[in-house]
Image (cartoon, rainbow, N blue to C red; front, side, top):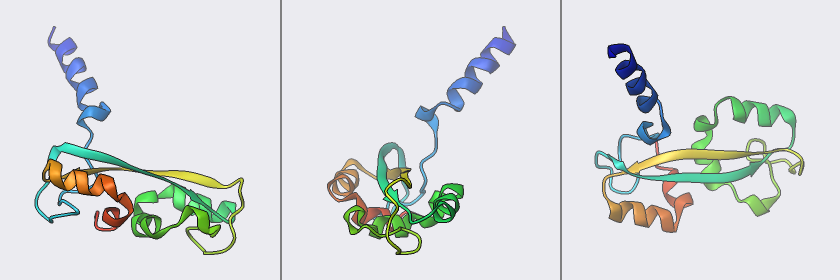
Length: 119
């Protein structure tokens, strides 16, 4: 019975519901976050070549500020600024936590403006 309880606990602890957000400070207020108040930031980004795409895919969190500034309709690679190859893109996703629902609502209105402050 004890083994079953440990197994159940392990499954719940690794489920996305309990996953930690990317940040510990609210990108809007700078206060400590409430892990229950989160939003998922998602954006499709384009690349000029497989090398840029591979570098990004290896550690997308490293390029949060570049993604926030990236304009999908620019036709330029998020990494190099060269023209995008339409066949090469990735989806950038990041779970972001906030100190309160008001900060989350502000972020949800303009996620690109707030994601750059997520560390």
